[in-house]
Length: 91
Image (cartoon, rainbow, N blue to C red):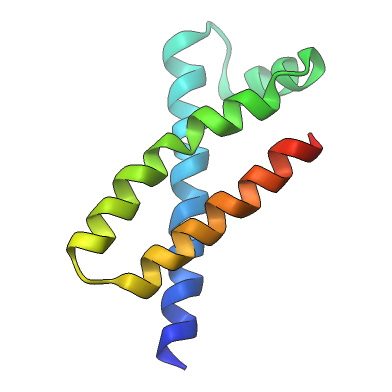
């Protein structure tokens, strides 16, 4: 049961890191607010690219979790990246 909770926690951490990465990218490299940037990029067809850039932070989290011997949480982060990849393909 603990392993499932660790995977779920890793998944949530992965999703939050990706959202934070998207937020950072929009704040640093555009002149729009986060929500306005999301709407404009979605209308322009570039939301998938922003999600992809946001998942770069997941690499750091994955590496830290592996170094901390939190293998099941790292699996959750990978599951989050796979889920975001599927979302990116559909958006």
